[in-house]
Length: 206
Image 1: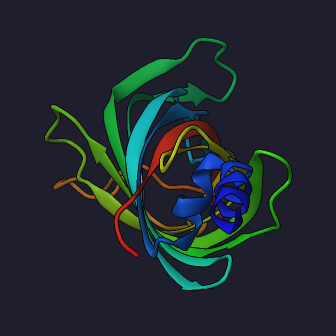
Image 2: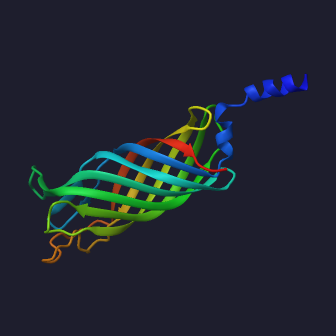
Image 3: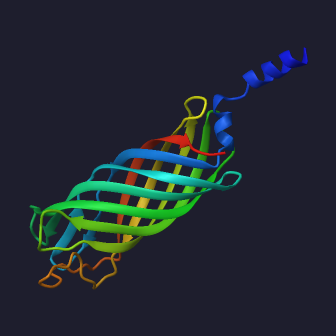
């Protein structure tokens, strides 16, 4: 009788309950990163919106608390919108890499979902492609996001979230400096981007 009661109780536990006790997560992600812009000496420099991909490696540090190591990649294009000119000029194809470390706090489960928020610090690498005129640059960056994890089965969950990314571009500094000097100077302090994404949460440890 006791065995039948225990079996019935276990049957009522959400399928993802086992995943709640793991200590490491790997989350490949795929999303859409909206373009950013920053004021410059010649006009406004713009990065086009495009798809993004990457991953998050997470380590549980306490109940509901995680340390996240995040990588994001976007392949896009950079444009110059000159002052007084309605047309844009393409500067180059651009590969952008983001590296972050931060914390994530999960809220109590709400039905099939576990809401969370996160905050991260790191760096943005803006790397022009197929050009010798401009060099790659590294800038300090920060990122904040909110989302939820959704149970898909016995262990795997779906992570959906929105993130805001700020890349610092201190006014008065050179931007994409080349061997001939800094031909691009920025006047803004930060470039802002938004991202929507989803990923499969794969538990790796206990």
